[in-house]
Length: 465
Image 1: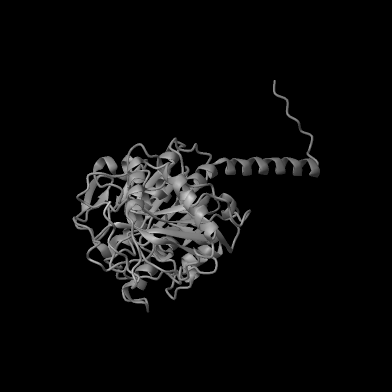
Image 2: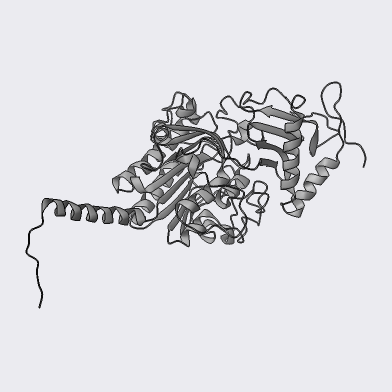
């Protein structure tokens, strides 16, 4: 026999019941892990977005910054394509994971299977995962995104200036050569479709755009529309793409449970602006490694914040792991959890020095407000002497810059700060011992090259050993 309580609820009891039900519903909604959208531009300079001082129209990214947080000292782990992507996806230096240089279509290598990517980490937690865009971590089937934690892949396996230039869906060639002017809209279409079919489960969308890497191309809708020429056209279309992603999240009620991140793999190449910073792509001066970074998560990241703390692309994996309650990979990480910076709980975090490499050669290190350059890979801009040739050379004297007062690295203050120079050198020495033997050997070889400044400021040929 079933007994039914027909006693009417008082208003107070009804409110308690409703509040409890609402609370249960809210907890249920929050118990679902957050979605992660990581948008990665190619060769976008620190000064290329409106919210970073550019005249190029980027209203969606500017709005994203206004609705979230923008960093002023965010760093790629390397000033060129493949290494920077390896570091982003693994939370480790590219010189640790076997991708110290740019990969080409002739290479038979890629990101090792022993490395855990953000995608593999989240897939183990039940996330749906997709990579849309430029991969550049190995083009053979065993190195493609579908072998590194992604359920699906759509894009070009390397840079758009390399040949052949296939457009892949998973491992199948759907177009050869890929039509450059259609890439951004087609990437966007694929990303939107992935969000729509994954909306009922947690998902990770990694969207490494092909642009603004050269050669540049824009669709008919954007071509010739920017006052800043083709570079402006390309960035305005990229900004439109970001807007489409944000709109899709909002349309499907995913806005408040999705962390959206936007940054670049390195500084600008021939076009684009490093802003007030010295150097460009391929250089370990600030213009080559300091990049825009915007994060948006309504209700979790406060609006309109600007963070001046130091952070790196290597920090994204441990931060995402913490946010999504995912176990960290077995390999030791170089990145740290920067969630306290993203939420504005802290303005800066104490961390180990960040190292910057040219291929296998360490060039400089950033620690707190200081940056110490200890070596430079020889180029005509450094030393035009043909007698030296192409090699990594120790600087005659380390160069120290205070990035708080001298962000364009114009005034060497090493002589006035010997203790800071010694401190950073000690940190470099200690860190190098944790790297694979080839990296340690490269460091020893560089130190063994004895050089001396000439009257003209150039560098003499290394003395015989």
